[in-house]
Length: 356
Ligand SMILES: Nc1ncnc2c1ncn2[C@@H]1O[C@H](COP(=O)(O)OP(=O)(O)OP(=O)(O)O)[C@@H](O)[C@H]1O
Image (cartoon, rainbow, N blue to C red; front, side, top):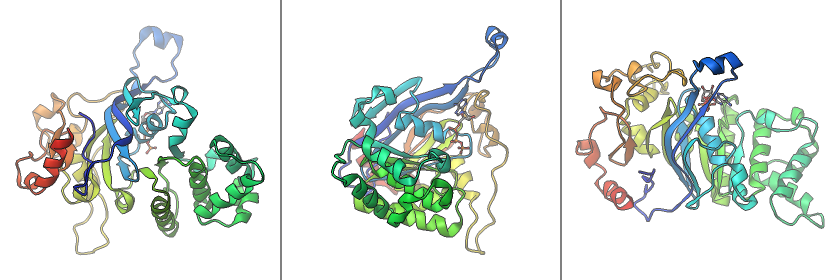
């Protein structure tokens, strides 16, 4: 089954621009010849059987703890990595990794990298990084339009023209994040993957960047995959949410519903860990325990050692996905679709069943 629960407004569903279907990716560590002979070090399963679809103009928030596989999933979307199993579809066509994609296909999916400062050549002024992106974009840059292009790109992220002459070291984290967004926009992508775009920024700069992302989306109609370990931040922009744990997407659904009615115990635990602004609210409950080693995943549900709802069955059986209301959930103990929560979304359920 693909990730189809997109019909948030009850309108006709849009086709996905980019889609991951049951993709898996494992990494082997650097091993000595003897290790290879013994074959005693299993690969790290960074992404396991994950499905995700992203449509024009929508924001999909991808959340989960550090090491759960968010960046690996992002690289499968952009083509920087090729899946070991499963398919990557662009407009319904199987595209695989970057080398399998045509230049036009590559430009459809933009990226703002996690460690944004490292993604710029420190020896180049900003103008050169943006010129390179424009040259790659396939648009005509003759007759000085290149410079106009740079100006236009900087304006689109509310930066003054003189930034073009600066070097990355001369820019703040927030300014560089804007330049990275401008560089991604040079290709006129349909979807931009934003890997932790506001982590490491102070609260005021975070808010400015989130407003800018919203503004850019309205102006250019671009879709986002917004990756963060911070649910509070994702809440601001996401239309839909995908929650990752130990390489799996354990729950997906419309963001406002997942925040109000989380179905997977891991989503519930993540929400309980968010501090509230309201002093009358309960204190946040930090998640107990640590995520599993991707090279040594527990049998059954990988969350069961940390899950307060787990039973003996969870240690043995890996549950299939269920549709619960408007969310797609992998958990034996999630409330079933006939519960009060499920029937609250009767129209959405019908819309989903039409999509399947
Ligand atoms: N190139 C690689 N070689 C070996 N292992 C890797 C590689 N890339 C990722 N991994 C491993 O895969 C797992 C998932 O990593 P990934 O970076 O995708 O997680 P993440 O959720 O993005 O983490 P973070 O929030 O800390 O950035 C981790 O255990 C990581 O060590």
